[in-house]
Image (cartoon, rainbow, N blue to C red):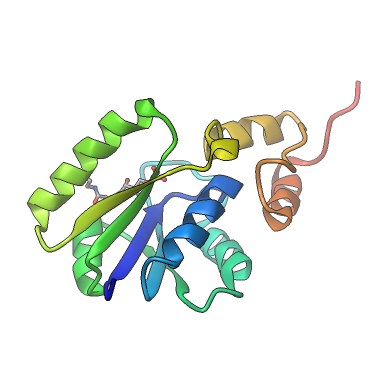
Length: 164
Ligand code: PNS
């Protein structure tokens, strides 16, 4: 497929589930832009710059992957980078309704851009950045959920397991 694709998200932080979608979808397109949303409404643990830097380090071996950040409407960003496809991961049927609504809204805003869904690999079906942050905030072990680099950065933010 000769189209530039975007994998957008908050990635606060990136999980092994996200990384799995990046690796798989990057094989489908000549270029995949992982685009981190600058969302003023959310209160992130990691700054956009920290998230972009982490994702860059974790994907530097993959020459098809580029990492960027964006603000405003995803469909405007897609135009600005001349991308024709949005990639989103679907973990379970609970994701579907929301993702379908967003994809249809986006297609109505910009009909040049299509959304494709990749089903998350089974071992990551339960994973979310929110749950990872919850476990990390109580000092739990997140090594099965995130890449080593992200685990280290989470430890810096949240500290290790609190004794007593
Ligand atoms: O990882 P997330 O938080 O599920 O990612 C959501 C994201 C970034 C894909 C979505 O919030 C988005 O595209 N936001 C940009 C604003 C926008 O275009 N909204 C219109 C969709 S109706």
